[in-house]
Image (cartoon, rainbow, N blue to C red; front, top):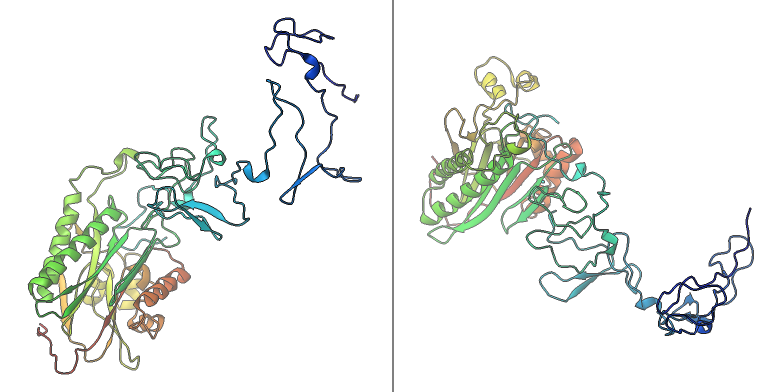
Length: 484
């Protein structure tokens, strides 16, 4: 049955904690005057569900009802009055409550002690923000949990509660701060040591724009990481005229570390092209040499440590591999080079002119069509269509870089892409319809639209596309090179 609670007697002395007996007026050990200890206040509900509300409070601060403080602490000193704005408070995400609802105070990157106010979202800058196979060698890649596979937060008893962590806390020594709990250090495997969340990979979505070229790469909707890579750049030829470069690589998912292979190939090919063009080497020769350099960079990964098999020692190990396609616009000349089934398309600004595919796939389907054994529709409908017959990697059959040069007679754009895009716009006419009409003026927007086209179509693969405008040389300025 319920009973009304009575005022409890003090069990111990507030001063020395000596046990007391009922009726004591002074502590028998230290002589503390027990009469100065106020009796327990009457119970007063803070919320009335049914009935009149509580009496008007004795203090009202900053529009918040706040009761007057009564009582003393163990030394007999009156308890201090804390105003609402003086109390420390954190949101459930671990961010400090602001005096202005909706605002957050964030550490300013690179400025010790400075903060940035943001009324829309938290600043996660600096924190790591990586279906059908695209090639015959591709298959289910190594198990690698991406952001979509992040599990629930850890409930380990000794795990730090993110709500009690000051958002201004410095990044833990030797690592990055978790974007989920804002408290734990991110381990080398990409997971938070505190809450266990997988961190967004930097390569999940990447965009880059230069004045005359732009590229976008996206993980897609089905893959657990982005195994594509690109590089865009520009250089000055010996005569001072510009040369623009776009390189796109697609990692082979059934190979070991395909994301590393594509990144190494794109970076090394780009560096080789820039160096050769600046020396005055013909763009087509520069392209051939760059693909050879990219192949050597991928081959070197086969013997490099960190194969990643410690997580799955029973998985078959093979050499890292990728495809490559690249385009160079220099002095009125358009040069493309490739190995594999990534492609380059020519789309004239005047859509009345015919678009064209500039590359031929190194694939089973292309071989069947070339041999006259199947037409293109039959070949690409076959389950073996995307089995590639050429790639960069230590286990490639032989290295045969393909290069071609063109001298367009009208302005247009070159679309350089992986099969994650052209699977949804395979023909040149289809690609032309998907490309915005103002692609030459807004290459980044055009690349974004093409990636969106692939994602809207299903996004079964990683999607990477570079858009490289081609303008005719000015009147009287001929090409320094002749097409081969």
